[in-house]
Length: 52
Image (cartoon, rainbow, N blue to C red; front, side, top):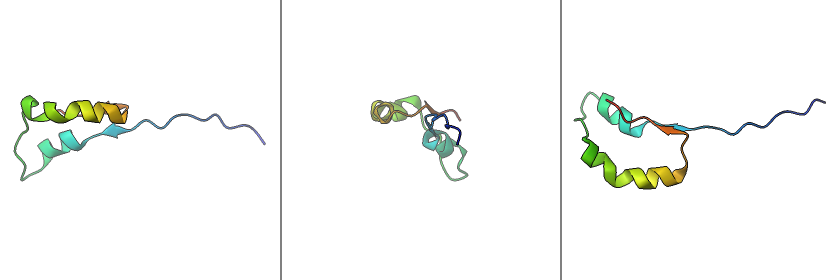
């Protein structure tokens, strides 16, 4: 049996982006996002989408 190369799973977090796209949500400002970004960085996401 051939050996399978293991590749890491890369996760993109979209919660900050999805909040912008909700029909009932208001736009988050950068200042509103800043308090959580350090903790999100510690999770080790491959990327974080936060555009609106």
